[in-house]
Length: 221
Ligand code: G3P
Image (cartoon, rainbow, N blue to C red):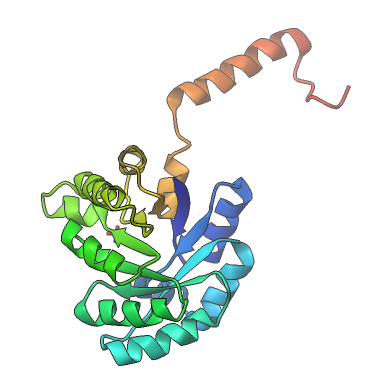
């Protein structure tokens, strides 16, 4: 499963990129607004940090304007994937833009039926929201399993991007379900490192070593 960061914050992206585990980025209008720059400018900066698919979302609600905006966003950088919502207008825009060779991420997907429509419209990526499905008392991970099963039944190439991942368990459940991509806030990626036995192990190894060799750092002898 590819790991994407769900942020438009450049410092977070630089930290994630330095770890060498980030394959792409997703943004949405809320995340772009938080950073205070116009979308074109912020997406260009993100493309300079992460070499992978970078989703940039349209901010119109009508298909004709989404198509105009989508073409503009796609011209920013070759890695830009245009994000449209899973509405009738969004699906219309997806059908038109995908035929022009533009790659689309259809977002705000909350059901397997909606995911079928995204695939039919030629989406490159569909984004089901795991955490927000859990929020309404349904099973977000089951949604990922259902979409992966349906797509595999028909050899559908649209990638399943598990979004709205809030915990390490969301990430591993999505990977077990066969999601192609998991996108998460920086703090969730950071949490994935944590295990008390890793910390304890590092501490014990160093203590044992230093008992014999004092505290001389490796390479200074
Ligand atoms: O990109 C979608 C994601 O940001 C939604 O996450 O936690 O607000 O449901 P959340």
